[in-house]
Image (cartoon, rainbow, N blue to C red; front, side, top):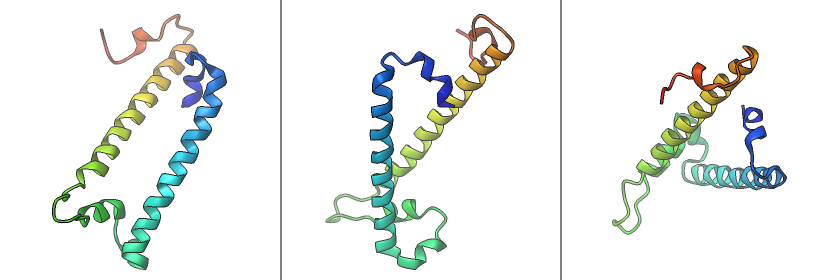
Length: 112
Protein backbone atom coordinates (compact mmCIF):
# COMPACT_ATOMS: atom_id res chain seq x y z
CA UNK A 1 0.00 0.00 0.00
CA UNK A 2 2.66 2.47 0.97
CA UNK A 3 4.61 1.98 -2.25
CA UNK A 4 1.79 3.89 -3.93
CA UNK A 5 2.56 6.86 -1.66
CA UNK A 6 6.36 6.81 -1.99
CA UNK A 7 6.53 8.79 -5.28
CA UNK A 8 4.70 11.70 -3.63
CA UNK A 9 7.03 12.12 -0.63
CA UNK A 10 8.67 15.56 -0.54
CA UNK A 11 11.86 14.42 1.25
CA UNK A 12 12.52 10.75 0.38
CA UNK A 13 15.86 10.76 2.21
CA UNK A 14 14.05 11.33 5.51
CA UNK A 15 11.42 8.67 4.79
CA UNK A 16 13.71 5.76 5.73
CA UNK A 17 14.71 7.36 9.03
CA UNK A 18 11.11 8.20 9.89
CA UNK A 19 10.04 4.67 8.98
CA UNK A 20 12.61 3.13 11.29
CA UNK A 21 11.72 5.50 14.15
CA UNK A 22 8.00 4.75 13.71
CA UNK A 23 8.59 0.99 13.68
CA UNK A 24 10.76 1.13 16.81
CA UNK A 25 8.22 3.34 18.57
CA UNK A 26 5.34 1.06 17.63
CA UNK A 27 7.32 -1.99 18.77
CA UNK A 28 8.08 -0.41 22.14
CA UNK A 29 4.45 0.66 22.59
CA UNK A 30 3.12 -2.80 21.75
CA UNK A 31 5.65 -4.40 24.09
CA UNK A 32 4.65 -2.10 26.97
CA UNK A 33 0.94 -2.75 26.40
CA UNK A 34 1.51 -6.50 26.25
CA UNK A 35 3.58 -6.41 29.44
CA UNK A 36 0.86 -4.39 31.20
CA UNK A 37 -1.88 -6.82 30.13
CA UNK A 38 0.18 -9.84 31.14
CA UNK A 39 1.17 -8.33 34.48
CA UNK A 40 -2.48 -7.63 35.37
CA UNK A 41 -4.23 -10.71 33.96
CA UNK A 42 -1.39 -13.22 33.67
CA UNK A 43 -2.24 -16.31 31.66
CA UNK A 44 -5.94 -15.38 31.91
CA UNK A 45 -5.36 -12.63 29.33
CA UNK A 46 -5.92 -15.23 26.62
CA UNK A 47 -9.58 -15.47 27.72
CA UNK A 48 -10.30 -11.86 26.70
CA UNK A 49 -10.99 -10.98 23.09
CA UNK A 50 -9.85 -7.37 23.52
CA UNK A 51 -7.51 -7.52 26.49
CA UNK A 52 -6.26 -3.94 26.04
CA UNK A 53 -9.81 -2.62 26.20
CA UNK A 54 -10.55 -4.76 29.25
CA UNK A 55 -7.40 -3.46 30.94
CA UNK A 56 -8.34 0.15 30.20
CA UNK A 57 -11.81 -0.42 31.71
CA UNK A 58 -10.21 -1.51 34.99
CA UNK A 59 -7.92 1.51 35.36
CA UNK A 60 -8.77 3.77 38.28
CA UNK A 61 -6.22 6.27 39.56
CA UNK A 62 -7.13 7.80 42.95
CA UNK A 63 -10.84 7.55 42.05
CA UNK A 64 -10.34 10.62 39.84
CA UNK A 65 -9.14 9.25 36.53
CA UNK A 66 -11.64 6.64 35.44
CA UNK A 67 -13.45 5.60 32.27
CA UNK A 68 -10.44 5.98 30.01
CA UNK A 69 -11.51 3.13 27.75
CA UNK A 70 -12.54 5.78 25.25
CA UNK A 71 -8.84 6.34 24.45
CA UNK A 72 -8.07 2.88 23.01
CA UNK A 73 -11.44 2.80 21.24
CA UNK A 74 -10.73 6.20 19.65
CA UNK A 75 -7.28 5.05 18.56
CA UNK A 76 -8.73 1.87 17.01
CA UNK A 77 -11.43 3.79 15.14
CA UNK A 78 -9.03 6.47 13.92
CA UNK A 79 -6.45 3.92 12.78
CA UNK A 80 -9.18 2.02 10.94
CA UNK A 81 -10.28 5.16 9.12
CA UNK A 82 -6.69 5.98 8.16
CA UNK A 83 -6.18 2.43 6.90
CA UNK A 84 -9.35 2.63 4.79
CA UNK A 85 -8.25 5.99 3.34
CA UNK A 86 -4.79 4.69 2.41
CA UNK A 87 -6.26 1.53 0.86
CA UNK A 88 -8.80 3.57 -1.14
CA UNK A 89 -6.09 5.92 -2.38
CA UNK A 90 -3.82 3.01 -3.38
CA UNK A 91 -6.71 1.27 -5.16
CA UNK A 92 -7.77 4.39 -7.08
CA UNK A 93 -4.22 5.34 -8.11
CA UNK A 94 -3.38 1.75 -9.03
CA UNK A 95 -6.50 1.39 -11.16
CA UNK A 96 -5.78 4.69 -12.89
CA UNK A 97 -2.28 3.44 -13.74
CA UNK A 98 -3.57 0.09 -15.00
CA UNK A 99 -6.20 1.81 -17.16
CA UNK A 100 -3.64 4.36 -18.45
CA UNK A 101 -5.60 7.34 -17.17
CA UNK A 102 -3.81 10.68 -16.91
CA UNK A 103 -5.44 11.53 -13.58
CA UNK A 104 -6.79 9.30 -10.84
CA UNK A 105 -9.54 11.69 -9.72
CA UNK A 106 -12.22 10.68 -12.28
CA UNK A 107 -12.01 7.10 -11.05
CA UNK A 108 -12.29 8.02 -7.37
CA UNK A 109 -15.52 7.55 -5.49
CA UNK A 110 -15.43 11.01 -3.98
CA UNK A 111 -16.40 14.02 -6.02
CA UNK A 112 -15.32 17.60 -5.44
